[in-house]
Length: 438
Image (tube, rainbow, N blue to C red; front, top):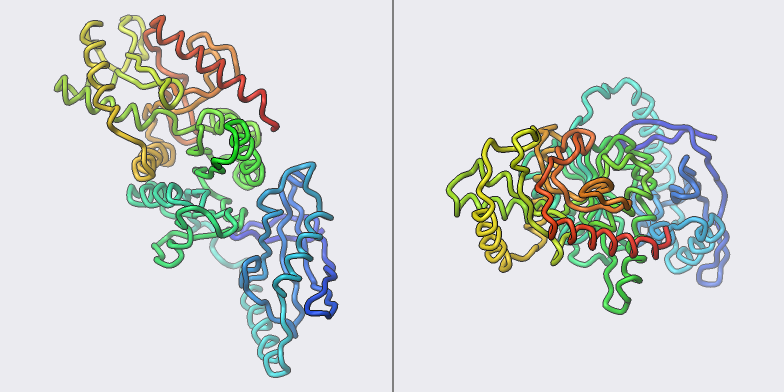
């Protein structure tokens, strides 16, 4: 057992394995010194892997090694218990080292300078305990993903000033479509850290998950399973580092991926929400506001259910005894139908691109971090809503704030066609969930 210090300064006693990995390079045999740190969530989460060079060794930064000696491998990214093991990890590590030697020998002069540097670092870190950790960021947001959507979410949240510290956690192996993380490293932004270290999420109030593993070569069910396997590689570790954070899921299909994230994280369902129909609802309400010339009344209309073609609209309950209604008066039913039909026609021409989804994610994140207690139509556990009895996530109007979903959804008009569509969506989603290997 040894003490591991995370990036946020917190420390924890973890099981530490130190030793050497035997390998051959250009006909010669080498023993590469490494150390592995096993988290409390092991074997569900992968170990933290580092080179452990001596004073006469230098770290060769490459595809799988950073300047601090941290080791990154596809095996770690795709870690899945019980398939993944320490032995399998070491075998892949040896194979990677044989392709790209991770260490090199320092000359006597370089070794002397290295020793002097290590001595200086030792003296500096001896005083770490005197640092005032109370000044640490209280509003930190992490976005997980390396593509365009991740970058759009990060920039939108930053522009909204929803937090004062941001992390882009790039879990890809350098080939992420869009290259958002790489570009962000080239054009740095204040208060934004780009990292591949899962421990960098520690202290986040909100963690936005944008990763997807889509492939045209796979069936829909195979694509879903690929996404499950991708989330399994980091979600357990994320919940370990941030047990009080709220997970906001932007991965697709959002209803199923929100359910998967909930199950893999072990967090209460109120701390896991999907972006759902938030964007559609905001667009719908704005169109209604323009047509009816009333900002107050437009807030009683919602887009709910399954994101995509099966989403439906619903209005606040006109029953005066229902104190959950957000408006004192409700449109006559005929006018509601006319507004709905017209608004949905206008919305047909609007797609959901990375930037628009990013703005929607920023809207949700701002409400949670700033504890605004604002109502959003987000993917939330729908069991009990519209008499749904299955554990599925559907978009429903929820009051959001610190901690996630603060209140049960407001009461909506229970129209037969709306209820029927929601039940069909719930049955279809549940059937797909049952076929996934979690």
